Image 1 (tube, one colour):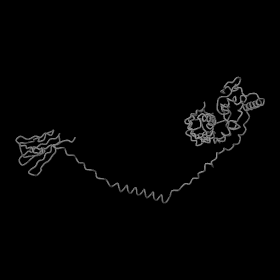
Image 2 (cartoon, one colour; image 1 turned 30 degrees about the horizontal axis):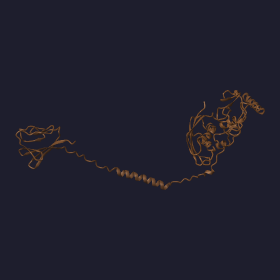
Image 3 (cartoon, rainbow, N blue to C red; image 1 turned 120 degrees about the horizontal axis):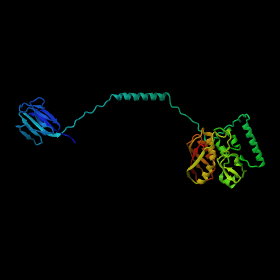
Image 4 (cartoon, helix red, strand yellow; image 1 turned 180 degrees about the horizontal axis):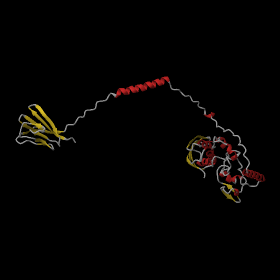
Length: 374
């Protein structure tokens, strides 16, 4: 809301001798005393408040006051005529700050200098184009690790003599057909024909494709049909720590997924196989979910072997593998997320799983949770 003021204009004839705006909290005095706003020669008015606080206009006694048509009050004091009217307070005009032009030449000079330096650098040292040789896909081969020489023979101790006697006794039992607790499976494990005895010869650079292609994994359904493979049974009492499923007089090892998980041989792996839990995240396509799950479950031992050989320490975490099963049943486009120490090795294991042909491709996503064994 705009405030109001009393405008005071004093004239002698046609000349304005004084003008003022009195606010609501102000006062305008006339008279002969010192400090008045408008001195006059009339001695009867020593210091008369012509405009008092609250925009009140007062008329001295004996002075004629005339109301003009425009709403003003006119007083005549001899030759001096005073007009008073209530008007809105005038707005204060603040002068705009002039534009400062002095920095402009400096900014222009700096930009020009930078541009000149850039042009000189581009002319004297042009950009070198890099050429990269890209190998075609069919020229990429899996690197086979070199075969290391066997370790030097160790000095014979009492412990090694006992182990040699145990091995000799086991060989004799095998020739006689007697059941033994250390009988190996009738077929080689996923590490090849030599089994776990050759683990010390391996290095972290693993030819997973070759190892898995030549592997025979433990298939529980097929084993149940053949009475656990039809192989010889053995007495579990020689090592009570084995987890077993009792079957009459003898029992069958049930703990572990890979061949020889419960055989504590020196140099078998950097650390024990972890506990692996797999979860199906997505299966979209013609290949049945049950078939995929069963095929992946059979390869958990190989994935655990990647963990054993390539992880520098026992790790706890999850690994996600996404892949596509083509119409020819081959696995393509494996993508991994998490556990980078052995993720590629695990993806290679998935890559060699054979599936039956299907009319359309199938997109698969699996998550594997690894927990170090106690």
